[in-house]
Image 1 (cartoon, rainbow, N blue to C red):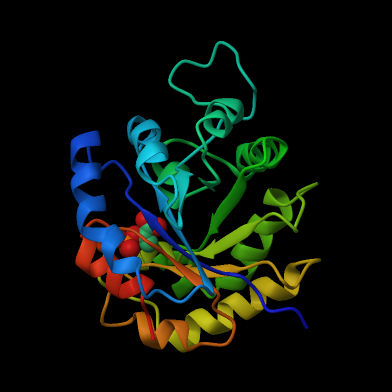
Image 2: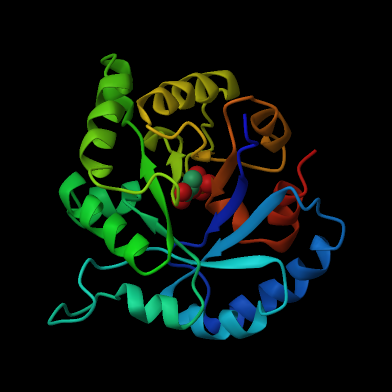
Length: 243
Ligand code: PEP
């Protein structure tokens, strides 16, 4: 069977001005000299950093990512950014349906599906985030919740241009990492739901330099989506250069 692509992505959330983003690159880019070619390295940054990073990353092996995309190409949608806007400045990946978007900004599986379609229409590879709350996990609803998210999110989505991130919400930003073996198990459940078993599936939730090697040793896990630990060049470098 074909080897699945490995994708190591940083999610800067609402951190780093343009000046701070340039500082980060000064420390980070030199650490990629010996990084094995088997892995794709992505930085998903605030919209205001995209233009300058598009220039600074030119000729490097780091791919540029955004953190959201609207479903229309243009229109009266104050505060939103469209696929053509991202595509034109060299964005390659876009996070869709992050739990913070779902929790704080009212995104539903229906809007997530529309955003996924728009991303693909404009040649962007969406990183679709799914995952359960602590309450849902404790109620034994992890599998059914994720299956229901995927059922709606993936309607008419091309599974040849897609990354999925399994992000248990209780593990995000908490330091409370999901056991690597349990993340591996849930990702196996996700893979069984897919038409294309070669979709790269990441784990996300308090990934750090001290747990990355164990996570990447799991057979079902094809990469990571990293929040806090992607903000410092040294910690993200250690994650990207996992063994
Ligand atoms: C995330 O924002 O997708 C995430 C996993 O954050 P953290 O690594 O900080 O838990």
